[in-house]
Length: 327
Ligand code: NAD
Ligand code: UDP
Image (cartoon, rainbow, N blue to C red; front, side):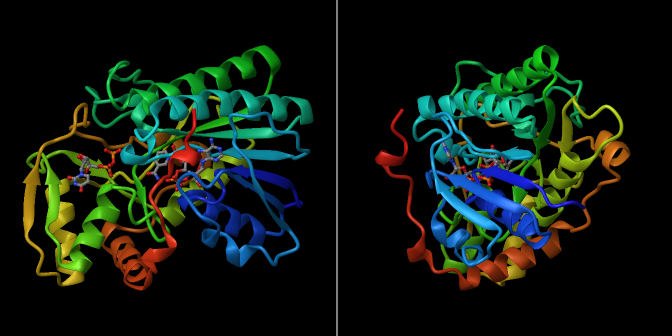
């Protein structure tokens, strides 16, 4: 593949840092742009001495002036606790971030991929979720800043495509986990693993019968890169990326306890408002267009993630701070 200049917004984050690693390995000229709201430099420190890697501290709500061939727009807090920390800023990041990156892609004729989310389906009434399902989102609930922000970003991507012929892709990413997740992000996989390793109670919200389908980080990033570089077929409409294997949250807790050998007990707490009851991707389109499907089963992925969390230096991580989230 010829060398390209690639911008990754949110490039210091959980998925972004792994994507940057893969792109650097392939010899591309990689610019990682991040404001470190939910990440820190340590995620990309090992890339800094590569000649084909640059790191820029910047907030995507402000215009960006760079010359690149491809843009992966990942900048946005992704965990409920993080995106609800400053919901107005979250909405701005999705909407202004889309406008600024699309404007840049338009000016330099770059191809641009939006990291959208299964949250555009809200609490789905169709199961599994296909891309033509329009969703069941509460526009005024506590998750709306993220869900509606991502929906607005999709609208902007489609309108820039229809109006300006922008070369764009939309990936609807389902729950993804793996090494380098933020340990305090409050997401279920990181929470359960840390709780199990520290011997603390495992906190199941609700009765644990709600489902999610968990995709390992490497599979997901492979899907993103395939979607970006695919040339044939209906690539402008959104593509679901996720693992089809669906688990209840209770099953996840049991698996984490088994793999870690933890003595933790399970406790039940209130289910947060608007928490989707079930979620499973239909990945027929990804299979057909990209020849992609996940290869790493939950048990194997959890083993790798648990290994990572056993070694992690928790003092490297901090909770989001107000000065990173000023609206
Ligand atoms: P993450 O929080 O680790 O990464 C997001 C990155 O964006 C962080 O490095 C953060 O500092 C940065 N960021 C946030 N606001 C910014 C701003 N205004 N300007 C510049 N940088 C900013 O989360 P992640 O899991 O790596 O998610 C990456 C992308 O994938 C996000 O857009 C997210 O919505 C999407 N996604 C992730 C999942 C998942 O399960 N991990 C699921 C669906 C969608
Ligand atoms: N969850 C839980 N215990 C936790 C954290 C999350 O039971 O300590 C539940 C949460 O209510 C949701 C599911 O796990 O039903 C997935 O939550 P997460 O925040 O990881 O992702 P999302 O809800 O955005 O899919």
